[in-house]
Image 1 (tube, rainbow, N blue to C red):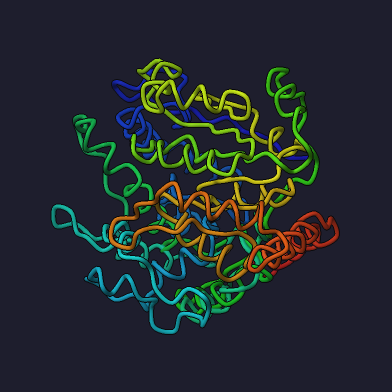
Image 2 (cartoon, rainbow, N blue to C red):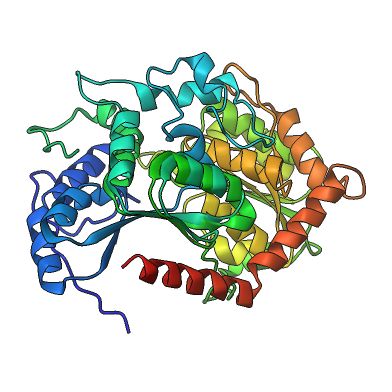
Length: 467
């Protein structure tokens, strides 16, 4: 039985007591929480010196652990990554040279596995330029990442086989698969909120890379069946163990009952006919993007359930009417829900009437959709989502990605409509028929309890061998 040992988050001026998650924080508060976590080093060192475990698992939030316990206490460190192997293999391996230009990032690194992903659109590559930028004379995210990966003993990845081989050959250290499941002192003062908001995801990425560089083992929530060539590439690049946990899916339906108003609305429609769309709680779409998305879902006349994330300081319903206009809301009132705020997403996805999930390509969202038997329409918006989408739509051919304009990533209502039509209307035509067949195969794979149990058993066996 696992024992949970509480830790105390140190006080930081400006951070209210009891806040320990970024889910509902302002960007400024998130920066303060990072400072507080960095102050936990003495507390964690004392605890681990008493427990003396063989391994300690950590992620980007505690990127300083390898230096803290590896060299001083002799404890091996396992960096556990929930990011896909493909995103790490494309961006973080040593085959990526320093000072990459926009043109460089549009091309895959030398030795990258031959796959459907040979290049990135300009707007995606531009999003990744910050990885190689130096701020105030300090090390770039890429430099910090290599240092972190180089220091760990084992790399564990939340994935399965494709792309794993590339990771192995690149890092030359053990890579374990879970299945689809340099320490700067905190600066004094408070970061201006607009800059904290901009730097937030970049700082998180830098912490992750630094942690990988210092760890003994990299564990990834994936499996060889999904990402084998990318994982092998990471192994050869980082030259440390990479272990895979498997996808870590939960086949059991979520507990609880769906809110009555949503159960009643969804119950009006035939099985697998409703389109559900939610693009995550941490991304705000522009007004233009909201309009194009909503109208794109409306075009074919299929019932849809659209969940939008709006700023916390606005009246959600009034803002929806302002953006989409009363005439749109009136047109769709009998066959469409446009909602802002939290919903029981897992229960909605598993409702028998829901047949399609338009999502941002987060790895966990993708697996959640597949096990819920929803067709995937992928609309990536930032970070690893772009490469996850390439993996699912390109390599696995289990979903369809919304077409975007190359230079700025713009998508229009027709792009949304065509993607949905491919998997929800043209079900007997190609590529829709093949996509649906592949989605069915991956669903059976993810729901196979024996396979998922073996992922964990193999992970534990490989980890014990490294103790």
